[in-house]
Image 1 (cartoon, one colour):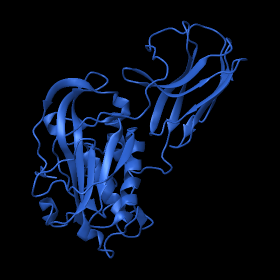
Image 2 (image 1 turned 135 degrees about the horizontal axis):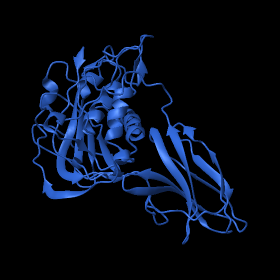
Image 3 (image 1 turned 60 degrees about the vertical axis):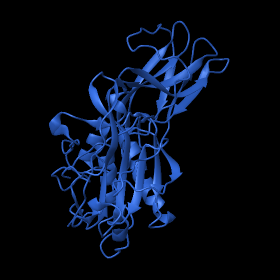
Image 4 (image 1 turned 90 degrees about the horizontal axis):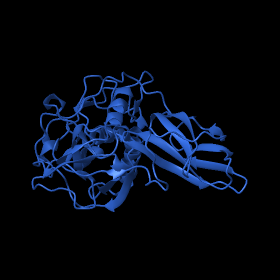
Length: 357
């Protein structure tokens, strides 16, 4: 078995998954004016990428109509439209992250009319394992690391050692992280930097996450027997989440993947599904560290530290987050609400210390 190692270090301000509301948010406690508003909901049990649509007719003719999702701290809009002169409307929006979410349709005005529903967003596969099988970096010290889920994660990729074809592998992994957390991710281009190297470096401004292929000579942590990747925060600061709880905000994070092991086609498959252990599993594992997860003892989770331990009954290896992984990423996702400042002090960087992973 080959051991995947994670790296903890310090971190950066994260990002908004959903667009800023086009209409003002109304406190959850406000009472809606009771008028007739007929609504038919489409797509309340969906997979990511499937739109949610509400159709109906307002009693007041033309009005601005919005779809909103409930988060700690208030409601956020994810779809808007204006009804026709006769009041008819169809408004759509996407909630592309897993979980059961409370949503509502609301109109504008002094007496808004609202209708509520719940939507369940599920993976296209059945996650195996136990939801309790997840852990957070430095949790024993009472610390939880997380990006601000209300800001997009801007990531850059260094494929200098392996060629641009490997970019797609990384983008597939980032799409899974986004679906698990609800955090928007944005590819911002190529990088030529290497994190966790002999010379300490961190992503430049404008990048929240750096993912690089590198050699063991360039990244000392990859010298360890069986190490094929390292990952974790590189800049941190104190904050509070949407419920007012203290959290250590990841400002910037990084992943380094062993480019020499990538060439070992007899041991690893450059895919997310094969009869060999896959690089998809490695990438998802290290991205888990970059987003604040630690190792677990359950072999049927991506965050188990040995690549190749989680073979499926049909003999395949699959790069997909399992039940415990998804539960941990959800805790660090949009459901915790938007972060507020707790301190302007940026914590000390620890980017060249594997911290026992």
